[in-house]
Length: 454
Ligand SMILES: Nc1nc2c(ncn2[C@@H]2O[C@H](COP(=O)(O)OP(=O)(O)OP(=O)(O)O)[C@@H](O)[C@H]2O)c(=O)[nH]1
Ligand SMILES: [Mg+2]
Image (cartoon, rainbow, N blue to C red):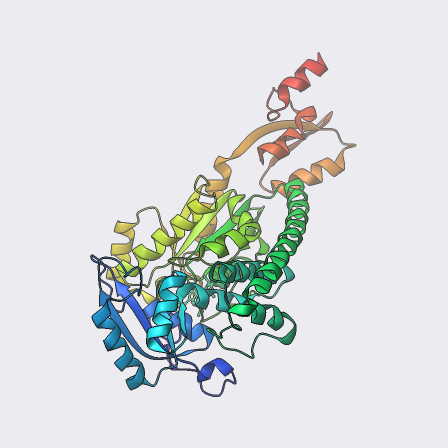
């Protein structure tokens, strides 16, 4: 297999040698190309998603329309083409690039005689495959149930699969007949309630972990961006961590936090789930707890695949921005990081710098630009720090070492009555040292101190 220019393996029709029941599924990829959309290969992403889900793409068909048909997605005439295309490509599944409403899906299936799945179903399927932690699994199951409940199908088989393993049916596997639906709905609702409760427990755990980190007062930086932009590779390159890197979409679902040091200071860096155009809403909802790491960060590194063609890149950036807004991270300080710069020639590089003057150009693979990135992270975080001057009594060695831990770059001077320290600290951390402040510069709590000292 060959790498293409954005570092992915070139798409193949199924992966030879891999035992996967879905490999028997041959999908015909379909999509509506809206007016004003000018993509070279409009279904490229859907095909990549299918490949990631282990389904072969047997053919493809697009229709230019202002909007999809509300009843059948495609127009009437195009449906006849589609039927011919299915037969010619010997496809046994149709995969649609948009999320279908149940009516469209039903009508299409009736008319075409093969299962029809939508983009959301494919993404949910990939997430189900890639969820490894208990939390990730709960979140995916919740999203799947909500998706299925909305279309009253396949619930029974979904619940059965919980015990039986989920590989026995491919995507698009139907559930039982309509008679089962009422029982299904009740079971699904019960299960959804139980999942929500469990996820609340996970959220509480996470809050405890976060409180512990806050006590350590390390600034936290979150990686965000389109799937496959190279977030995990960048985390590894900056921190020396061994996080899984994938040539497929949505490789990472669970947040991983690691530390790195720069100029005597330590920073926490968190890698989490990637974004995508039209990311199913159920997933954003279900992954709230995971995405909270991003929301609460001091700084978000928006990682972009700089080697993508301009239009695709603009789309990826917009999709990530929209998702950041949706999860409530719109107000957090953000830095644009153009990754995979090793794949870009000098002229394109100049163009990138012109188009995105604030972006840092890096290659997580070769290490190019990483020193500059660390320095910029440090400078950005420093803006949020408070300068304090403290006199630490010799007896309080413990507190002095806490200061060193957080602000390795502090200035110190041994004086007669203790150690004089000038340091820049996170505001909340500075508050805890207000009792040692001199010259009224002891963080936000200094008013209290002076009152007490008089
Ligand atoms: N050439 C090149 N390839 C890179 C670079 N950074 C990452 N890659 C490749 O891009 C692919 C995706 O990288 P990941 O780090 O898994 O991307 P991600 O953003 O974590 O993706 P998700 O977890 O799916 O959201 C992998 O095949 C990496 O080897 C880079 O700087 N240069
Ligand atoms: Mg990743």
